Length: 148
Image (cartoon, rainbow, N blue to C red; front, side, top):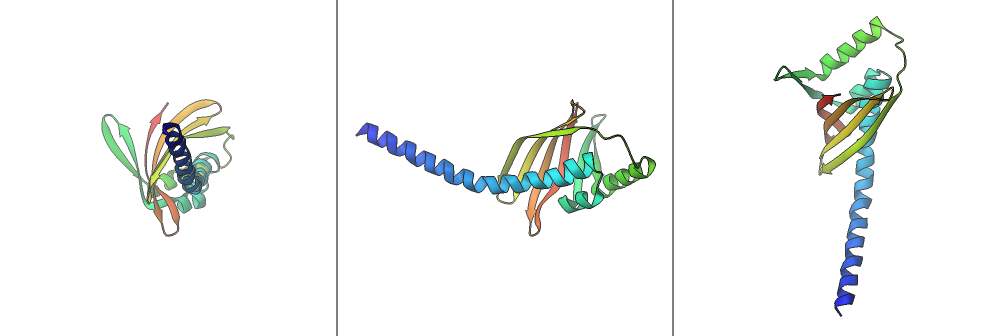
């Protein structure tokens, strides 16, 4: 009898795990898609301000730790820097950009993604991106990072 109960709990646990992962998959995929398009491609590969604006919320802020103080960078400031860089150097050498999602976690309409970013084989950033889900989809609302 004890063996039957144990098997029943194992089956129930597996079914519950399967159900939860079935719901998590599409949400994880949607979060990763926004981060890939707006952040990885938009900022680090293509410097495409349309992609950036599509995936970042207008009230986005990046917190930068500098000399033991927090400096806030708005999306407008960040996009302006990218546009200035494109004017100064319209055809920069292409870097081989790789990335790895080491964490995607969400609860309701809030999410966080940890992304390891590599350029030309060198580990450049560990990024922590916060996202909210709006009527038009997931948007990146905040970022902190570690530069390597």
